[in-house]
Image (cartoon, rainbow, N blue to C red; front, side, top):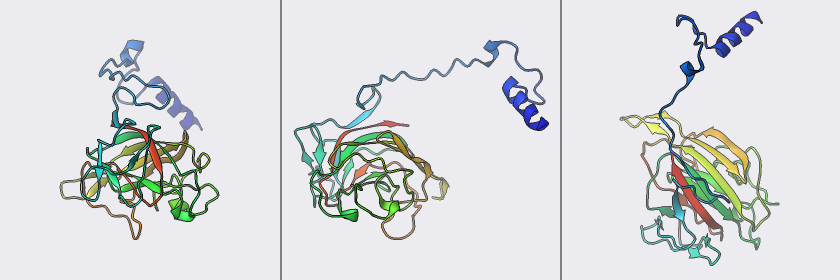
Length: 246
C-alpha cells in the first residue's frame, strides 16, 4: 500500500528519479508547439472542413466499378442517396487511402425480403480487405461474427445498435492501417473502431488480417488502397460519405 501511495505522489508531482527536483513554475510544463490545425465542424454529421467528400448527393464521380474500372453503375436517388444495383458489382473509390476517420450512413430496404445473410446485406471494406458488415439484423438471426457491426468473421460487435428496418443508420469508423516491413512481414496490426448510431460496437479491435468469407485471415503486404462498398444482391442505400486522412 505504501509503495502504491509513493508511486502516486511521484506521478502527480512529476518527480522522476535521477532527474532532479520537480518544476516549481507552471510554465515549466507548458508546451506551445506544434499548434494543431484548425478544423471547422459541421452540424448533422456533414463533412468537416478538412474532409474528403466521397459522395455529395449528386453523382458517383469519386467511385468506379471494381470489376473493370468503369463508372459506378449504382442508382442515384432524388433524396441525395444512392442504392446498390444488384448484379452491377462492388464499387470502390478512385483514390487510395491509408489510415482514416470515415463517416457514412446506410439503410436497408424498407420491404423485408430474405433472411439471414440475404436480408439487407452489404459491407464496407477498408483498403479493399477489411470488412465492416452492413446487414438488416432486426428480427433476423445470423452468425454473431457476421451480424451488423461485426468485423466480418473476426469480431462480434459489443452491441446491436440498429434503428428500425428502412431507417438511416450511421457508421463512424476509425481505421489505422497495418504496417509491413521491407520484406513484407507485418510489423503492426491494423485496428478498427466503430460507432454504430453513436454506440461503440468495435473498440480498437486489432485486425487478424483480411476478412475472409472462407478460411483464415491473410497478411500479405500492401500499401494504401481504395474504400470498397459491396453489392451482395440487396438494395442497400448509402449517403453522406466523407473521410479524413489520419
